[in-house]
Amino acid sequence: MATDLDAPGATPPRATAPGRRARRSRTGTPYALITPAVAYLLLVFVTAMLLVVSYSLRHESTAALVAPVDMSTWAGYLTDGYYWGVLGTTLRIALEVVVLTLLVAYPTAWLLSRMRRGVRFAAAVLVLFSPVLVSVVVRSYGWILLLADNGPIAAVSPVDLLYHEAGVVIALVHVELPFAVFPLMTVMAGLPDRVLEAAADLGAGPVRRFLRVVLPLTLPGVVAAAQIVFALSISAFATPALLGGGRVQVLSELIYANIAELNWPLAAVQALVLLAVSLTVLATFNVLNRRVEASRREGTR
Amino acid sequence: MTLGKDAMGARRGATRPGRNAVRAGRWLAGVWLTAVLGFVLAPLVVVLVGSFSTAGGRIFPPDGLTLRWYGEVFRHEPFRTGLVNSLLVAGVATALALSVGTAAAYAIDRYRFPGRTALRALFIAPLSVPRIVIGFALFVLIVTLTPRFYGSIAGVALAHGLILLPFVVSIVGAALSGLDPALEEAGRDLGFGPLATFRRVTLPQLRIGLTTAGVFAFVTSFDEVDTSIFLIRPGQSTLPIEMFLYLEQSQDPTLAALSAILIGFSVVAVALLVAVAGFGGLLRALGNGTRR
Image (cartoon, rainbow over all chains, first blue to last red; front, side, top):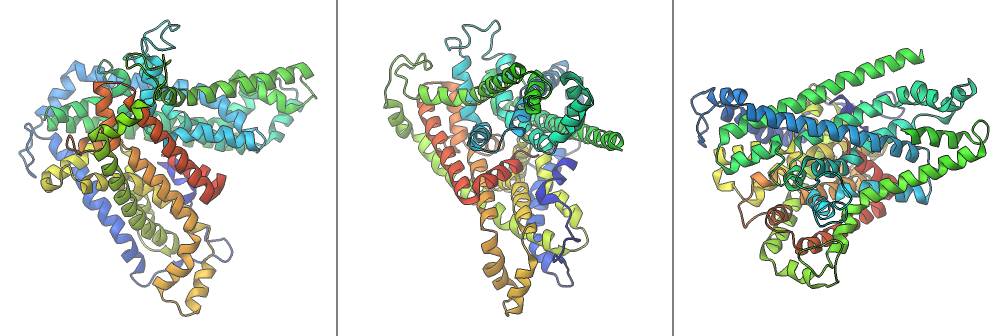
């Protein structure tokens, strides 16, 4: 992911920085250092992914390393309307979560980025980000209690929440919110007040300032936030499983259910479909991100 | 979105919008932030309050208060074994990811060699794969190649290590790129060998980065559900999985009590990060954690 590579840890080496000399290795040292990690990723990660592909090309659940190639599992999956329906539910939930999360995260990140760096700011940021360190099962359980039929919210809610799509969406927005606020805040913090003042001095009203200045300049943050939230939502498992109560079926739940039913080839097909959807989403947003960046550079010229 | 504009109005001061508009903007901004923070805290507060609830039927709002569910947590055997297993898995996975990841981050930061960029992409790759897929893939790997390891601590830790490796490589990599290599050269000039230089010069400077990465990795592994659920045997699993399975059966306040204890642990983890790395360090760790 291009956005990942912009992370501090992944910045290109600052070869030009004074006093910083990366050594060009003539010995084997870097290879010796990197071999364990590479071996780990190749032997475990890459091998496992290749095995998933091999399992998807089987018909029966065998733990044999090699089995005859059989496309019937794929054919069965792709022609079954039920599976397409589950994929549709998965994407619809993810889309709803992205839109709602952005609607909550955008103004929140804006307010935080304009806050004076004091105790109140630190407290707000701590509260907002700490749930990342709380188990997703605990957070889902909290939502189960809140949304339960005899709980405090169901009494005033016009729609069914717990064990319905709405409940899954609310809980997912809660889980993904920090992941959206963070990239937005980073981009917004880099937007100087001067720009807004200049726009106001040129006679732009608040609506125009937002639509013509703030939104275009913060669009990369919006794209980055949407990318992360979308990718996390389509593959979320625990939250939809617990808040959906079996009534809301998403792709990740099917994979788990098929393991329990010992239908490994079907689970492999579903895992690959989820991976393909997820990589497509990431790649689409990367393209979008490049477009936004390019048009922004064009605009500032 | 309206709020963004109002806040902007507030920042502009008294030049353009009227004083009342500014005050209204500030007020709205305060209300919005309070509401969002309330939304974030709500499920956690409910769990904390619910853990003292007397009734099994309606947990929140509680009808009366009791401490008995905290006793139930410790009497429930699967939670006890789950806790031990989770601590073991998180310890092994964190140690694995830290040792392997730090070495890799060091090589990538300090040396120029062919294939460096491709390797960095490889280390970040597991982040782009849904965790549920990683879990299933590891399940397939283990039952095919080493069925004896199915359901073992080592198997689960091996899967978690994959998820943690990208975090470690990027957090430690960031810490490394902030160091001055001249100090290492000085170490070598003093006659230290490469290992001694690393241990006595580099490692002490990496303390904060390594602690941040370590705490974050440990908590992530300890809370992990999506990968573990494919790799455990019933009755011999990790704590989040035991909680997940328990929740599918019943929702009595025992789980609320356990959740309250775990929230307490998270608070300790946050405090630990702030104490070691400062507020900025915590933000950086979370920034790395929230970047995928």
